Length: 429
Ligand code: AMP
Image (cartoon, rainbow, N blue to C red; front, side, top):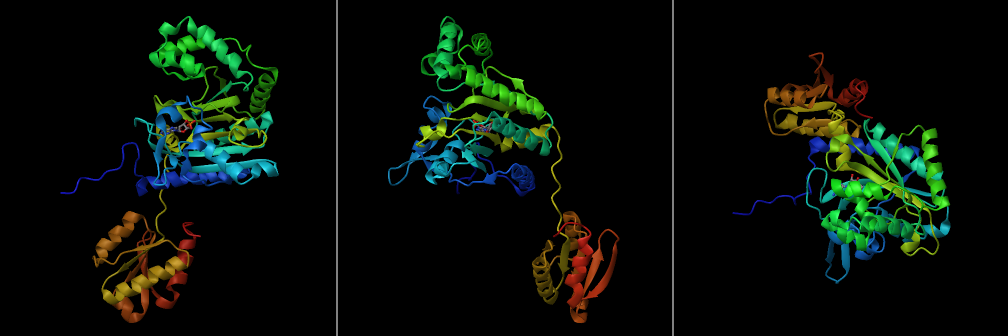
């Protein structure tokens, strides 16, 4: 007997009952993004490993433990993309957009892959919606990106998403911050968890990420002063947050927020949702002014962006009991009985679909009663009945399911008549 085939843990199927929901989220997102002037970019799922090694930071969890990395037959190091920003930067540079200057506002939507232990809200294949703005130095651009993020979440129906913001300073500030952290952590190294003790030498910033209560308490005590921050960085994030107040976007400062990837500078942010449990981040992002040059750009290109986890957006919608959009029913069900009628029915279905209507039908020879039940189940407002009589008389009987009334219509006029009848239902264009 063949072994039972199943999907990889943490990589789920989405059945049609759920895809409608995914599509609704994607459609709303695309509408909101278009209003803000974002255009979609589609980059490959497979990238050279270098793309992520050069960008994410060697000591990040993603690079150390989570990349699906393999050698292809040509011996090339390949990665299934774990996130979208590095790919977007690679694409931006490869197509010479850094040379043309100006603002580039991109969004992407698609699967990402991380080798993690699957749990609620943590998948091996998950989907992100991300935005990236290249060529944007102004703090107002940070504010606009954040306003877009919160607008998007509220347009999707979420009311409880909470925005947290921190200032990570620039690459000149970073050594001062790391020094301050080292100094205050070193005396308490014994109290830190094993992983954080190692981080003390590799990358003390990552200690701020630790979810263990004890490490968090110690971390809180060590980020107290912001003496390490330069004046420009302090002013940048102040201007961005002041602009958020103008735009009536609420947020909370969070001095422990460092994000899991190393490329962020100045503004870093995360949106949490109370309905998500332990993995409570819906998404996050920030400014990454050094990344383009770090990945081979000839000059610095200031940039800011975010990524939103779509599985978690759906979980949050469930938690807030936002009703999924109803699946639109076909406008017409064609019920046919007998071979000649079935052939007519097949032709009618084709003509209706060519005329722009959503039409359902079947050829299994089930009784009219069963076919009518199927039409009701699908929620079709009209049924076109074709039996021996209709074939003989060159007619179609059109039944209005809500009025429970039916009348014959000449075959030649039936598509036009169904089009007229269904125009009021608003289902088909
Ligand atoms: P990151 O790229 O790590 O900043 O993640 C951005 C967002 O993507 C997170 O806030 C999550 O919503 C989502 N995300 C990241 N990793 C996973 C995962 N393994 N499973 C599901 N969603 C994820």
